[in-house]
Length: 158
Image (tube, rainbow, N blue to C red; front, side):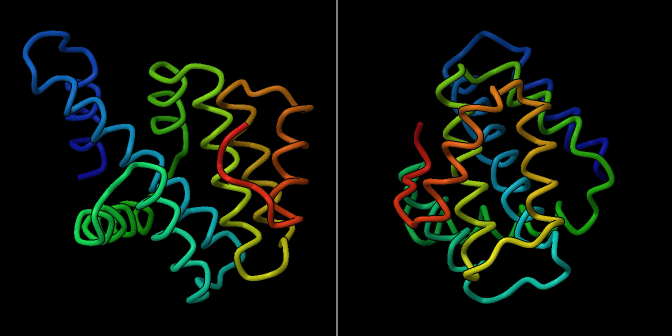
């Protein structure tokens, strides 16, 4: 199932024709981002309701989705994150399709999710740092985004 999803996402990103390819690309980016957000929220082995609300709110705002669209994306991402064995495919997809500012925005969202329950667990911290390395976001920028999220003034943007 996981391999089929990655094949569909990769196929959507590799197909530059037709109007739907842009929609497929955006859907793949939204899905990959949401899966990473859910994975960060679960990193401390506790998926707190505040973390769920944080993921939902940030996905809705960041991607401009309706409540229904955001709920469907979060539910789908939650199912994928449940079966997640590797971050590589999702981070590779984002790295190949986002510019530096967009990748930083994703890292900002991840930090905000990590701090959603009021504290940063060592596993959440480690996971966000690992994802930022896989996305090739500079450590200085990652630390600024972390500081912003810790102080509650992060907006998911760099």
